Length: 212
Image (cartoon, rainbow, N blue to C red):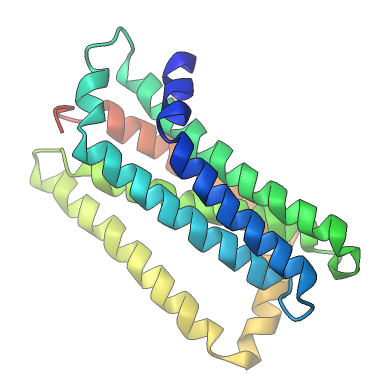
């Protein structure tokens, strides 16, 4: 399993270097420009992360990398763990830049900042994992799983739309944001991520085909 994880990082090395270079440039700009702020910097790195994951995921699908892995003496569950560790490590690297920003701007550290970082990491990982579940569920040959697949996708879209709708209301965004950056919400999101990750591993293990 570990050699496969190392191979994944070697394969995407150039894209990783470019992604983190962009993220570091955002960090420098956020530190130097007073009006940039911690929250904007987190959004910058999050968007960069999703773009990177989209490119890497599409590249892996187009090159049918899972088909290649099936000839190795490794169980499908271990492939799923490799995917999980890959997205986790890359995101933890982004959150490391968040911490670095706060070292340069300690005056922006608030009582709930730590829980905000934990909650954001968990939420980002939940979203990226749900896209993985959506992709893998597409290889089930029964209508039941196909319906579940589209329900999951629609749930993600509905959640994103609802978030932006709430975000447009200034009367609700401030208290909601304060609640979001609290210990109970952060712990709950971590638990949800663990559950979604377990679901993703199980869906991957039960795929009808690894030829795509």
